[in-house]
Length: 122
Figure 1 (spheres, one colour):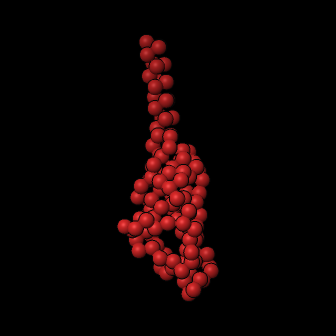
Figure 2: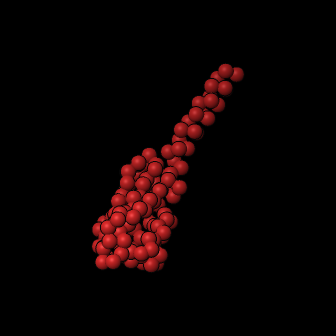
Figure 3: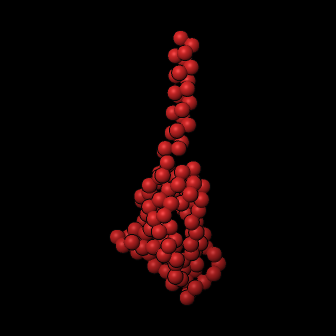
């Protein structure tokens, strides 16, 4: 009986530990946008931070970016419109666990950016 209890406890512990590793996805992506205070060609500049809150690398991150425009060039390896109101982050490359991608753009009003797809590499 003790072996069965020990086995069940071990199985439960492993399930709880691996659940956190294998459950990475859209809910683990946080996007923060804050006004920088700079004005570029009459438009306020916005600093964006995309955070991978998971321990695992995430790649092929795509955000909704409806009608995205900017008066300030954005490095396309960090943030690039793909068409169809979708934008690629980090050129599709992996964002390490607990790491960030940062970029800025200038427009008014700011764009509502939200993750629509991502692949976890666990």
